[in-house]
Length: 211
Image 1 (cartoon, rainbow, N blue to C red):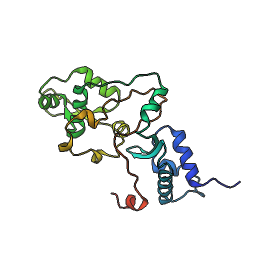
Image 2 (cartoon, rainbow, N blue to C red):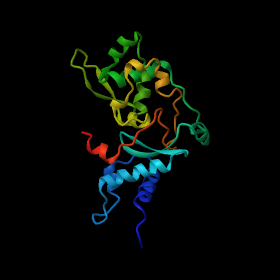
Image 3 (tube, rainbow, N blue to C red):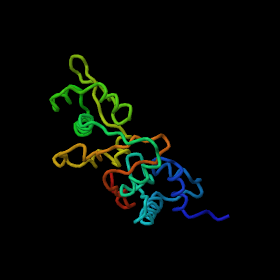
Image 4 (cartoon, helix red, strand yellow):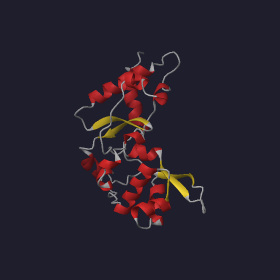
């Protein structure tokens, strides 16, 4: 029995995984005697991205690896498959998340100093329950306040490979528009939401030159 094309195997794995897969995880699909080069995996990902051009799904590279996701252009229709309504997050929550993303690690008090108002416990609770932020340490000052930073899940949810993919802070006039406005609260088995900005796949040559 002949093995299916590499691209076909990778496509099936990405769809079945339900989340991002790293290059190492994709390589782990193969035995020692059949394992392709990393460059071949990247080339296959690029071919899949080209195959999906103009279709309702796309290949995206995020912090956790590569995934198949719904395109933003068709997301409003796909979202109707689930009964749960989109959660409208408050401006205060979005501003808090933006400050953590750009100034991390940062304490709650430092966020309050910038915003000029108190950060409610519910905001911090929501962000931590969504696994978008976490405590990464404590400031070495009286009271040892917790330091907050974003998580890998934050990067994956918003379609970012790293914090370097955040738009320049000077370009952010409205955190609500940057974060995609209405963020969908997804049921556990729902597909990964589209990222608010395009994702760019690295070619094998670019990856080799990336530190």
